[in-house]
Length: 132
Image (cartoon, rainbow, N blue to C red; front, side, top):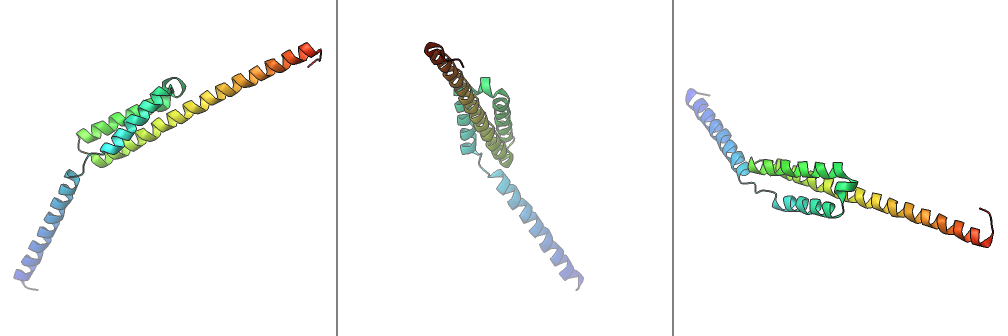
């Protein structure tokens, strides 16, 4: 290989590397914000708040809010992949808060019904003269 062909090969390589870098930057810059994921996270947090997750699952709800704030920060920093990940994590945390809230509410209703049933049984036995 002579000097001219070596210089041409090196020039082509530099051009390829440069073009690849430009295309990668363009791809990163053109990634749109994860609007749907952010909206889903906001909605999941709103649902959890309406379900009283602040009372029953405050840790999970707080984590969902923190992840959503991180997603918003990532969007402002144009880190869209990271923003999408945080938005999805926020959504999952909010859904967990809602599920935990529903579970704890159901357990409370179940305990109340069990207690009421026990009271009714005692009352029926007392009126019939039976001993428990």
